[in-house]
Length: 289
Image 1 (tube, rainbow, N blue to C red):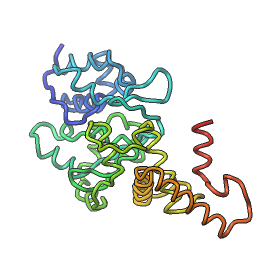
Image 2 (tube, rainbow, N blue to C red):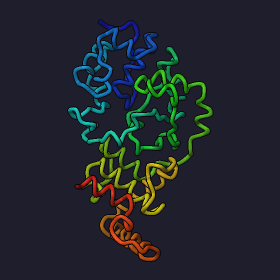
Image 3 (cartoon, helix red, strand yellow):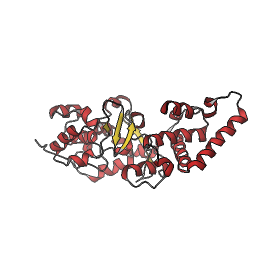
């Protein structure tokens, strides 16, 4: 059975988000109701199930491979996902909030003439917590759909509908900046355009992302900083600084460790790895135990 109205998947649009937009296109303003109507498993869409994606593609009359390419495929029962050949931990993803580039949404709205709720969509890279800037508009991503809409975070068309009247305000809230070399590297790993970077290339992408944050946090704010507690601009800076240190290879990494040691010897009486390396030591101890 085909629907009366269908859609062309947007560039970098994920299967569950496409289903939400398809529901809105057909005036069914609840993703779960829409999926029950056509016996689609919502969690299967979120988890990147090939079988469910094929069902969705058949319903929409589109190519399953096109929409499936942007899926984050859950690995078994674990809280890990495979996306474009790279493994992501659940902690690497912004699953509990919806982040957008307001300028992209404005373009989505102006590009089509069908029902407004079905026009804007989230890009798959916006789900990655370490990607904080839109490379098309040089704007920081902003969070929408907080409060009562958090429970409907997978029904992104309805979340974005709440943001549409505020796009001008959201654009004003976004920080004007170019993507950092770190963000460019992450995107390049996903689309195959990343410039060679021997030291980061030797690690899984999820480890590069987290290690960049931990190293950069220690470099910019000191080893005792809780990187996850920093506001977006500070985290963006720390992740960029940390990645540049890693990309500099052994020379820059050893120089970073020397700076930590020098700072420690200048003002500490307690000894041991935790006072010296702080949260970086804690993360390494857990990650590689």
